Length: 434
Image (cartoon, rainbow, N blue to C red):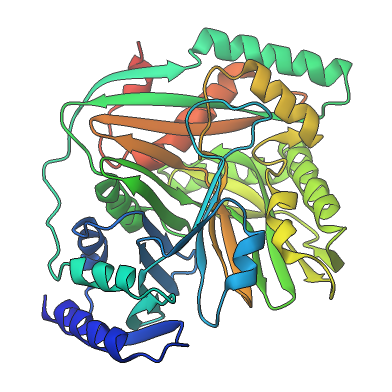
């Protein structure tokens, strides 16, 4: 497409003539069709690939290639220049290594395609060695790929844990809550969906972005044929200067196609003591985590409803002021994982999860986003999936507190997984698991 071709040509010219102390170049891209961005990213032979769309839809970014990589964000802050951002995140934290997933991955990309409101830019981050960025720009493709149709069909579904083990684990959790200091633990399920042909993660994300509103949309792909995607309603935190904003998103019920019954479900949720208590646990956890870093912590007085396509949640907004001498590089790990995706107290919940969940969460319920010198934003990596060839691995969790029932929580997992699964099939395949 000519608009990409012109921008790539301009970018290559600017790289050749940029002064030695230049750290970033941006050129405008005219007339970008929003629906062409993900196909354009798929057509690029440059890894890693990262996609981000903010929850308010004001920003969209494709990040390609790695000029620098980091295991932690502290050293990244020390080398950031104006307008540069480090992208990536932390996987779910285990005390002992579980599975093959990296604990964290952060990178300064060679190339970014950025939308700010309605304006598009193609950018490069420059290092002293210009050869790597020259190669990356040279590899950029002008064209987009059309996604395959029809979508693959589901041939097999497998739950880990199965429902019997899930019931056992919920009972164990309730016993631990009644006999120890554990107040809440979030138990998760991985559902592997076997397909009759290959599905690209970017294809599923394109469908999700279209259908699942009021969500952060992200994709992380470190290599060909293997991607982690998500459409999450939950912000971990954002920072603008010294202003910190976060939220307690906990307490869930499904949606109904009939408005009157949907309203009944909403009214039940907003008054249900169990769900309100679960939300309060998350508020308390976040406030405690912010305390060493922030002052003037303000919590929304009452929980309000967030209505999504398949489920609705209780949510309370929290904001605070980052203290003048606080180490902002430590804020991310201080907040993650919140009680919304691990439990409370955190150390007891993590211990229970590690001992009893029969799979690695990997990036699921970790954090994904970016840091820059003046701002940062991370979402919680829920409503997410790992896409590997003809395997789609879906993840969902449910908070276990006094009063939780294993069957009800199992059904809640199905509703949460339908956020992504319903994009490729409307059949009730989750009930047909082997």
